[in-house]
Image (cartoon, rainbow, N blue to C red; front, top):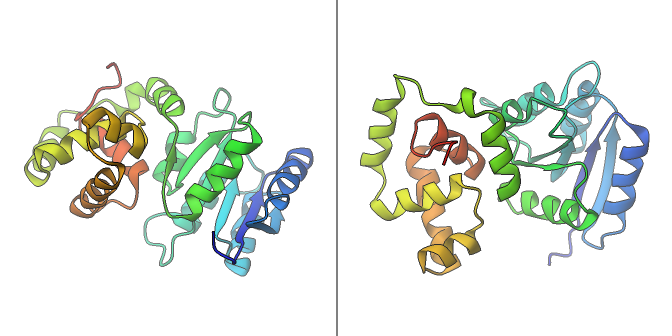
Length: 228
C-alpha cells in the first residue's frame, strides 16, 4: 500500500447518500475524500480543480447528468481521462451502457456492501476496470437488443479475429463474460499474471483503454452473444 491516499471525489445529488459515501471512504486508511458535488456541472468543475484519483459518479443528477459529466471528464478526446466509478440503481437507470461508452471505468449498484464500494474505488485507482460478473450479465440482458451485432459488424469482427491470437480471443470472450483475471486463469488453466499479460496485449492491439471497452466491443461485433 502506498503512503499517498487515494483522493476521492463524490458526485451524488442525494445528500444522505453522499454523506454515507463520505463516511465510508473517509474511514479507510488509504483514502481521502477531497470534495463533493450535487450536480453534474459541479462535478466536472470540481474534478478539473481538484484532480482526484477516482470520481464516484451517480448517473441521475440535475443540470448535467452523470453520463455527460463522465463524457466531459473521461470520454473520447480528453487529454488526461479521469477515472470514474459509476454507482447507480441499475433497475431504475437505463443509461449505464451509455456511461460505459462515455468513459466510465466500471460501475457498481448502489446497494453494494460498503466493502465492495471501497474495493471498487481501489480497483479503479489502480487503473483496472470494474465490471462484476453479475452486473455484466444484467447489462447484456438489459441491452441485448442494442448490443446485437448489425450487418456491418462482420468486417470488424473478422479484423479482430485476424489481429488476435487464438488464446487472446479466448481471453477476450471470458472478459466479455465478466470474469476476473483470477477466474479466467482458473478456467483456462493459466496463471493470473499470464491473464494480465494477455489482457494488456488485447487492449493494445485493439486500441482499447480498458476491459469495459473490450466487453462492449466483443458484444457489438458479435464475438460473443448476449443470449449465451
